[in-house]
Image (spheres, helix red, strand yellow):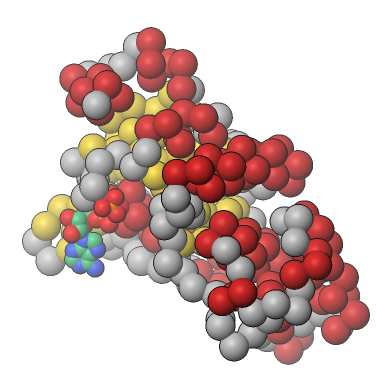
Length: 241
Ligand SMILES: Nc1ncnc2c1ncn2[C@@H]1O[C@H](COP(=O)(O)OP(=O)(O)OP(=O)(O)O)[C@@H](O)[C@H]1O
């Protein structure tokens, strides 16, 4: 088991946003968190990333068997890409990808030659080897998101967390990148959780889909299971909508 979540709840002031969430994501799996606006998808992803913390006292998150519930994002080694998680405009593509490797604590930092090797390899993987010297404002939106993905992967994260990574792109590019991400994932086989409110995206990309509604998990299943056997009205309405 790669990500294990047990009885996580979250309140902001007195408002309950997540209620008793438990979920297991298998090693190498690609899982979508799908739900309407305000259902708590981003909050759950941020808690898994270590950018937000669950209500104290109960609930637990494990990565590969080790508890990370109250660890910082840095220590738990999660890679993340957000819709508007902008690249650094004053750094080139290669420098952006290298960033996480350079800011590591001294004793963890790899030698320069090794860092360059990782960047070159990732540039190949995201199919932008000839773009290493460009600046973000010289790239298309889709290319920028691929660079953001490479930057997240450079530090060899334990899990990859994506929040609407293609949300800001037009429909055609979105579709292309979807296919590309699926292939990319099949090659690197890194456990990946991604947030989307787009049912087509979730069903086309994910091995399993988690439907969130009103801060609770309504159903977890493969796209076929959700289509054929929605467990309640919420899921069938949401999937039909
Ligand atoms: N820092 C915060 N302080 C107070 N309320 C918050 C905070 N972050 C999120 N919320 C509230 O928590 C609820 C869930 O928000 P969240 O962003 O997790 O939903 P979402 O499913 O990702 O929605 P969307 O698809 O619109 O991004 C919303 O009602 C939101 O207003």
